[in-house]
Length: 239
Image: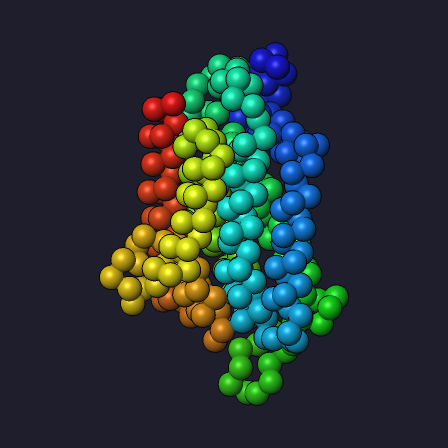
C-alpha cells in the first residue's frame, strides 16, 4: 500500500483509494438512497423558481452530505488508517486525503441535486416581472449548494470514528450538529455562530443574488468549517 501511495501522488492516491473503498463497500448506496428520497420530497410538491428550489434542496441535503462524509471516513479500518498515515507521510496529509475524498463524494451528490429537478419539472421560470430571472436563480442555487459542502464534510469528520472513538458517539455528534445548523445557525440568534447557515442560505436564494447576504453567509460557513476542522485535528492528535 505504501508503494502504491508513493507512486500515485500521496494525498491524491489515498483520497482515491478511500473513495473506491467507500463505493465498493456498498456504503455509497445508503447515501444515494437518502439523497434521492430527500430530492424527491423537495421537488415532489410542484415546480418552484430556481433559486428557491435549489436553496431549499441544499439545506435539506446537508445531513445527507454530513452522514456521507462520516460513512466514507469510517469505511477504512482503524489499523489500515494508521498504516495510511505512515504511508502518506503523517497525520496532516492523511487528514487532507480524507477531506479531499469526502469533498469529491459530496460534489457528486450536489451534481445530482442540480440535475434532478429538470427531468421531473421541479424548476420553473419567473412568474412575474419582479421575480429573478432563471439564470440569476440558477447561479444563486449553485452557490447555496456549494456553500454547504465544506461545513457538511467538517461535521462528518467530527462525527467519524477516528475523531470520537466510537460509532455511537459519532451518530450523536452528527445528529447534534445537524440540529444546531437548523436551529441556531440564524443571524438573528445570539448563538448563530454555533451552526452553519442552513436555513438562512435557503432564504437568501429566494430573491436571486443578494450579494451582501451571500458574502455574509459565505464568511459564516467558512469560519464554522475552520473551527470544526480545528477541533477535528485536535481530536485526531489525541487518539
